[in-house]
Length: 71
Image (cartoon, rainbow, N blue to C red):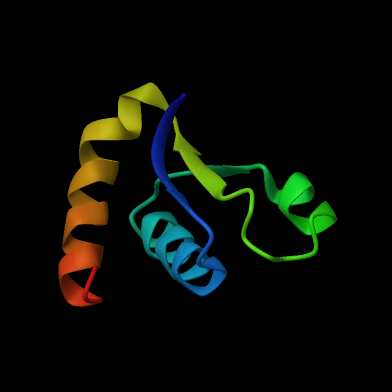
């Protein structure tokens, strides 16, 4: 698995995860529980991981997503 993006912006991560899923790319969110333990202050960003074989397409989807959403 490769790290696609790391962020504390939960809304953006959720929208990106849904966008990737709509393209048939399975996403695994790491650090979900540690960020919940720290009280949501953003000290520990979450990471979206994708399979190595999906990395190229996932990066294209990420680039288009960021262009569309001002990232």
